[in-house]
Every structure is written in C-alpha cells, then in structure tokens.
Amino acid sequence: MDYQSDQEYIKLDFTQKRFQIGEYESCTFIDCNFSNIDLSACNFTDCTFRGCNMGMVKLSNTVLNDVRFNECKLLGLHFEDCNKVIFAVSFKKSQLPLSCFYQLKMKKTKFIECQLQEVDFTETDLTESIFDECDFQGAVFDNTILEKVDLSGSFNFSINPNQNRIKHATFSRTELAGLLDSFHIKIV
Image 1 (cartoon, helix red, strand yellow):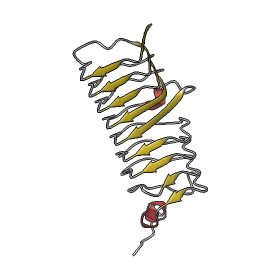
Image 2: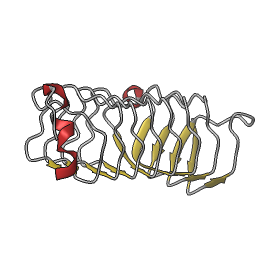
Image 3: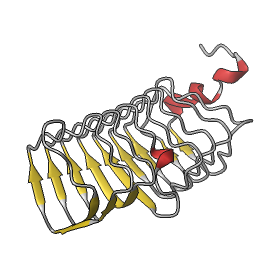
C-alpha cells in the first residue's frame, strides 16, 4: 500500500488521473475532483479536503481519522461504510445532501454552515456535537443520540423527542416547531 505524508494535491481530477489507493497522513487536497471514485480501504489521517467534489465516492472500510472537509461537495456519501473503529471528521461550509451516517459514533463532531438535506442520522451517536447554521431539510433522525448537542443555530429539522434522545440538547426558540412536527400541532 502506498504511503504519502505532508503532501499537497491541488486541482487534480481523479476521474481522469487514477487515485493511488494507500495511506495519506497530514495531506491536503485542494479543489480536487473525486466524483464517483472508489476510495475503499484508503487511510486518511490528519488530512484536509478543501473545495473538493467527492460526490458518490465509495468509502468501504475507509479510515477517516481527524479528517476535515471544508467547502466540499459530498453528495450521497455512505459514511457508514467507513471503518467504524477509527472515525473522526468535521465539516465546514460543505454540502452533504443524501449522505448517510447510519449507526456511527460521532461524539463532539462539528458541522459548521453545512447543507444537510435528507441526510440519514438513524441510530447515530452525536453526543455533544455542534451544528452551527446547518440546514436539515428532510434529514432523518430515528433512535439518534442527540444528548448535549447544540442545534441552536440550525434550522429545518424535524426531530421526534419520543424517538430520539435529546436530553440537555440546545435549540433556538425560533426553531422549536421542529421538535413538535411529529405531534401534528399547529403553532401560530
């Protein structure tokens, strides 16, 4: 397996140039196109992806250890296919529509100004995570652990308190309706 450390990859199109499967440590990927690429069995440790298109990337047994996604397009990613033992990520100003985090442990994860439309958080442990200015339109929360989560700056979520653990979570007063959707209550 190829090993790369402290490398910078700028404006590479991996749909045209083959991506080398291997271990990447302290590497930075800037404005790269990974669309539909198979990153299965790759190891990324302390890496940053900035401005990258990673739509529909395959992540089977991929290690994402302290990986930061900034201003990335992450359409339809199945993060639940990643290595579950070593999984630590953060997202800033990224688009993650139709992505899935099913059954992942993501304690203290930061999502800053992200588009999380129709993302699946079913059975995900998000304890103490921060969601700042995130759009959750159509996102799924089912048996999700949201204890001590900060959702105070986020919007368009629909979370059933009877089907999710939300103890000590923080919500903004203007978005409380998202906690009552399942009760079919009119708020005027």
